[in-house]
Length: 282
Image 1 (cartoon, rainbow, N blue to C red):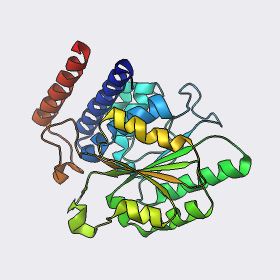
Image 2: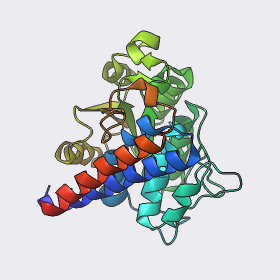
Image 3: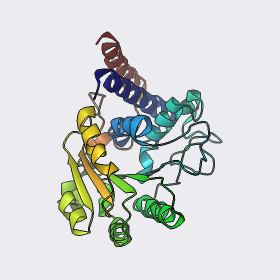
């Protein structure tokens, strides 16, 4: 990947992270940890991989994105705002009564949101339906779904996995955000879904293992493999860092579902702005 493009993607991801911190701070609630871990994924999807038109969110031939781990919507909202789907000032009213952006995505009211999600396991099922619809209609769009690793403890995920393979949904790409933490701690101690790659392979999926979900060269290489359909749905199992980009949030399950206070907000924004300034120098 060219340095200029990589810098652009890193800057976009940094803005997404700033939006996550801003939104959860203003809401005094939300899920910053798992939102920060997918900022780079969203940056790549919205700037490289997906065929979209922010000026026409309902364009029938757009690629679809389903955030199956809907609680990570602060990152999705920040990415959509950065692409121009709505004004960035909306991020400051996250979760406020009557505001556009609520605690989980709502496809009926928020431009750019393709599926209302929040009940874990249901998003990937909806993504399967979208992918099957494209097959039946002869449409070329692809469907992307982002799942949490703790979400894999839901049986519905594996019903959807079986369905996708059975119907040869090779226009479906799932991304498992494997940060190894959920609200109650390490996924291995709560209810281990490992080995994630072998399980999806056993269900008939093409599996791509991404060992660093914050390295854009590796992200680029992983998604490049998804562009040649082979009759199977594809899953990218990406190893990420919960809370990535904010030092005191990284690898801390406590930041799964709480908002930063004023001091923590200022520290987080200082770190993120410093990282952005470093990009400008480089």
